[in-house]
Image (cartoon, rainbow, N blue to C red; front, side, top):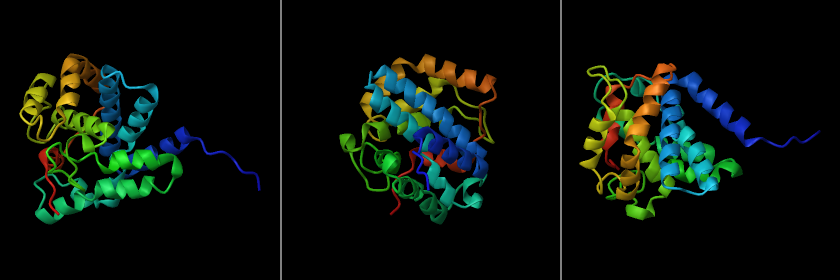
Amino acid sequence: MIKQQVNTHEVIDIIVNILDARDPNTSVHSWRVAEVSGMIAEAMQLPEKEKGILHTAAHLHDIGKIGISDKILNKPGSLTAEENEQIQAHPRIGCNILGRLPMFREISMIVLYHHERFDGLGYPEGLTGENIPLASRIISTADTIDAITADRPYRKAKSAEECFLEMELHTGSQFCPTVISYATMIKDDIEGVLNELKIKGIKHYAFVGHEELMHSRRLI
């Protein structure tokens, strides 16, 4: 049997396509989060290797939602405590999926911690401050930017200005102050890119339950 070398980008493409087949909204959301994460990393002048790892992790940060039922993912109303507990399992599910491949071990840990909060009230492990990987802190910020600037059943997408005013209120509690400061520096550029993606048809419709995750805290 001829052994063929596995191409990392091909594996990523397969995973992203699996996610898209399962839930197009999550796939497009991840695409937008990857774009914003990359912009923040560029503003922070991170090394090229770190930017590459971050970009891949951002694309795959919600892969664990494959293990969450459609009933919960697509629920148009508020989530119950039990449903919230189930959806809070998605970072660990994603970590377990990605961690099975040696090439994704580092990325799996970034995915695991993308819902941690700077104040230690996040999940799954309640890490605090700079104990949370920088890439996870960047993805958390980009994740929220996309959540606020996406359309909702009850409102249109908010502007970047409104988004950053909201995030300022939670800087130092939910969000890393350093990451927020760099993201704020380029907020006009971020809004421009997200608007450009909408023009190109790369947009998504977010449900109420997903917005609840924006400031969610660890339940267990």
